[in-house]
Length: 108
Image 1 (cartoon, rainbow, N blue to C red):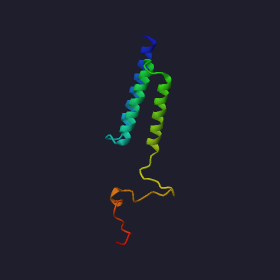
Image 2: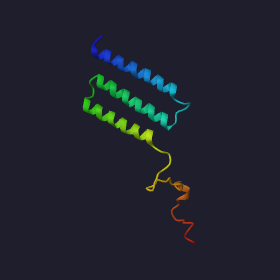
Image 3: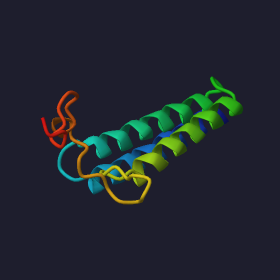
């Protein structure tokens, strides 16, 4: 077995074990969070395979890894409620309450 084949087998085994763990920890169904985690994992797996097979060089692979880290950081820290500059949540953000030509306080 060559070094490339051994490295490829190691990457596949590590990613298969990690995918099994993710699948076991995942709640029932594919919500936006679970789908994002699986897609990030898939991109990371493809990047690792391409790097092991010398299809992509380290600067490109590191750029992909940093993009994954940035997206995952936003995914795990995103709040569901928008925050205004004062630090309080905005309660009137739905499209139904923000119609363009009507203002209930205008007195018309």
